[in-house]
Structure formats: C-alpha cells, structure tokens
Length: 196
Image 1 (spheres, rainbow, N blue to C red):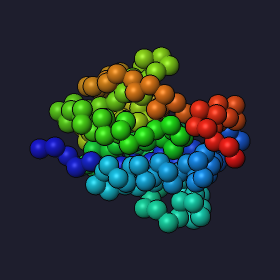
Image 2 (image 1 turned 135 degrees about the vertical axis):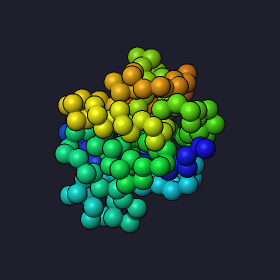
Image 3 (image 1 turned 90 degrees about the horizontal axis):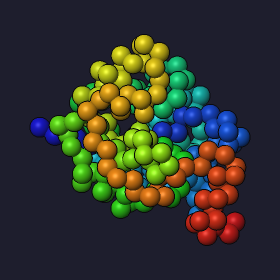
Image 4 (image 1 turned 180 degrees about the horizontal axis):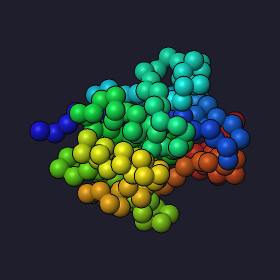
C-alpha cells in the first residue's frame, strides 16, 4: 500500500552564508517561507515546517504546524529524521525553504513520478547531476538507513541517496536553484524580475 504523502518545509537552518534568515527573505512581495509553504500545502495531505527549538515562537513560523528538531543541529537530516520519527508511516515531500524559483508544476511532476516501492524519488541537480535531497520524496523505508547513517556520524542526505533505492528524475532546470548567499539572492531576484 502506498504511504500517505506529507510535506516538510525545512526552515531550521542558521543561514550563516546569507547572514540573515533565508525563510524571511522577500522575493515577490512575501516571505519565501510563506510562498514555499503554500506550494507544499497545496500538493500534500498535511504539511509542517521543520524548526529548531529556538524558532518555535518566531512570528514567521509560529502560526504554522511545526515539527521541532529532535536531533542536534546537523543540517537538513535533523529535520527529515525528526519528521520520520513523528510520523513513521508516511512519506515526506521535503523542501528546502530557499528555492524561490520552485513552482507547482515541478512538485506535481515529482509526485506523479513517485515510486513508493523505492526509498526515495528525487530530481537530478541541474548543476552537478547528483540527486537533489531537498526537493525530494522520502518514503518510510528510507528512515532506517538515514538514522543509521546519522548514528555513524554521516549527516549528508545526498550521500544517503547514493546507497538507498532512489529514482532520480531529470533535472527540472532552474526550478531548484537556491539562494544561499546575498549574491545568489540578487541573481535570483533579477531572474524573477523583482523590483524591490
């Protein structure tokens, strides 16, 4: 039986390279977190925002359903593992909150091509061709391997995809381009035609 599909918006990072909260950045008139949240909520049965304990009362995040990281700050894997622990029998459509070019068509295609018999369904990165773990569907079967790798000190979800049974779809082009630095943010704002 195919597991239900829930959404997880990763917003617990410290945004060190950006030097400000990436989730709060405005691209087209609203914070990126809220835009990404709407996309995720529209395509999944339930959706949650992944946060660190210190972020639960943050005004941008406080009004949304949250899953608080149960693992020390080790990057995106903390959010994925925490969601899998909270709801172990569902698949998770995991999104990074720093994908301003992401659109609903890209998410619908990922869901339509989902193979629930495998551990994950992902897109290839347009930059290096490797699996993109932060716009991906993680099936319940991926949890054992992710948790074991975490316990072994390996915190990279991309590397986990290399050993899991993963369906890698062709890159959706610029839809997964992220903004981690002020220069990348300005480049994306130019592409979006943002004027403010």
